Image (tube, rainbow, N blue to C red):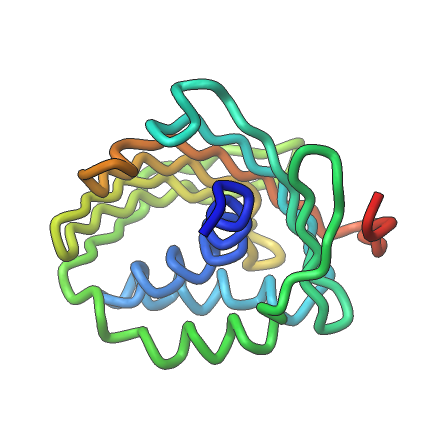
Length: 178
């Protein structure tokens, strides 16, 4: 699998991984259910990642869920993913019990771009990997607004820090192949 394909897979699956990781306790389950809403509504996610596999350099990507289509931008080019929002939701449902050690808790209230949010922390250790996240959830809409995630999966993939920003208004299909 090429680096580009690997990046697309990571970018597309990141919200699903988060949702699966969040299913262990009642707070985690509530966060997983809220995160699952992104597959049913127009969602534009902006991601920046610094990781071992990127050579420590920041890489930015975008992801759009719209009309049961997943659009992925990498290196300025948009493509359609085979992983539809419906498929991502199915993956989430089949994997909910696979992270029994995740622990989630409310940390504080904050706003994101003027929108009231509750900040939650999540810690998960699973099959040799560790994930620590902070998730800003909209108080009025019950959807994620922002995510900061630190992962250590060991091996060649190593450590990564990912920042995700979610937008839900004016989401349109991008020009594919350009």
